[in-house]
Image (cartoon, rainbow, N blue to C red):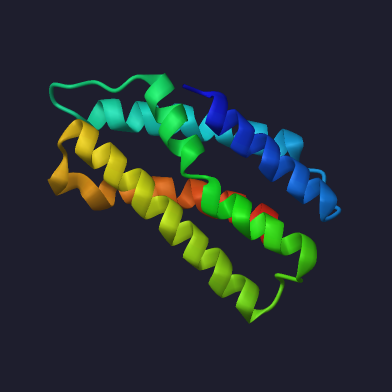
Length: 133
């Protein structure tokens, strides 16, 4: 099911457009390259079960919701100060925690939780940096 992730990516792009930032190409590029990278990483880390690219795209896309909320807040408020950084860090943490939990549960990789969370968090941090700056 990729309808929701595509909708969230489009919402992120439109809310950034309303804030005066045209980043559709960056959003698409980071999302596709990030999904492919996380897909390769997860399949290299698992021993028996393999995960599909569509599940990775769906999970990462649905977990973009907190970042879309931050971009909606960026339309009304300026996010360049300390409050914007705290809100952005909270969104990265929320998105990373949710996506990591879903990957860990589906692949049964409790011991590699932080190895999964680090690249996922970096991917979401790129989206938040586009939103704040």
